[in-house]
Image (tube, rainbow, N blue to C red; front, side):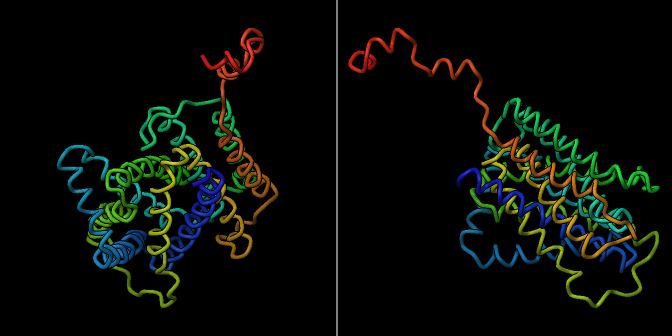
Length: 329
């Protein structure tokens, strides 16, 4: 697909991440139990994907190709574990999003995603291989971090629990790793559905264990909320995990992370303006940081061609003098 289309889709995907953060944060607050909320989110997504995979022949073939790739060692087994990072991501939504507010929570997430995107692209962890850090990509990452700092500056002064922000920051680094792993799985299976199903299967297994351990120590929730939208986090997650698995090969881990940054900040800003949480007002710095993040995505996506390549492509005085009849030798 054209690069501009892929980048636009990463921004939309980032908006879905912010929407899921709000849903899962509210479900965790209603249940007063982050582990059950996270297990419901991932588990419901797994059910949806399992039904689609069972009913869709191409989905079954994708799962078969993935199994064959692992058996033939064309895909390392540890690349199937992207769902572990996804489980941690969803757990932090329940632990921190309701306290920090979606905008501030998202700022911490995208800081981790930006750092992870730079590192994982440089070492070639994604399915597209190693992507050298060109000046535009470095500038885009730096600008994104500046945008994050600006967006968070107004709220840091308001007794924000900074240690709590380490949870979504670590989840953001994990999210970049998850995107790279899911992209690898998608490439090996030639199926975004197989990659997404694997992600949700692993993540659900992890969260069920966490939920049982948590329930053994503090008990189960006494009541479940009746609002249907609180249980939609899994369905939203199915969409954005599949989109990331497809897009990461086209744009790379860093540009994907920055596109998600822009989408998450923009959607989180809209959600906190329309439906504020935790009594935290949205200031000018948050708005300005969001706009700056969008500029960072555009900057990082520019393809950089070193000057020596441009010079090699340009005709020299000698070849120009030879004319079109001799320049094809």
